[in-house]
Image (cartoon, rainbow, N blue to C red; front, side):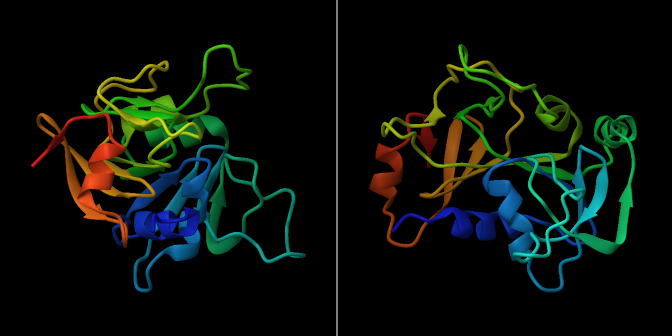
Length: 209
């Protein structure tokens, strides 16, 4: 069976390296803090001005003043610090954040990323994704492999406005894990019960051996 959202987030949490600073995008990536492996010490950064995010609060313990970039309530840690957006983006643009785990609407086989708007739809703002993909050391995308119509979101070329060109390193979907390599994408891992044939059939992008 394909992975569900929590299983995708748990797989993404395995990408976290001990001692690093990481930014999480909205959507499935916001679930990642709930699955950080024991013994891995990661400091999570939010572009709205928070360094050191804890997991989601239990029901009844929410603090409306503590939110992530996706406007979801979160918890703080004893080491948490707060700052303004200018300092937050200074960290990102200055290369201080090791990795970003982001959601996406489309990813291309060369690592192009589209995750900030759909033409004709209301957009509140581009957020921090463009700065993140340009400033961090590694970009991991977590998303469903196909859209609600069953069309692939892992494409030869993105059709939506780009967030960044050639920026994605790894793609984690409900079907498995793909790496961006020379010539296309390489299957690194399959979700339990998903076959390579199913992965290839759901992927428009070129899959290399």
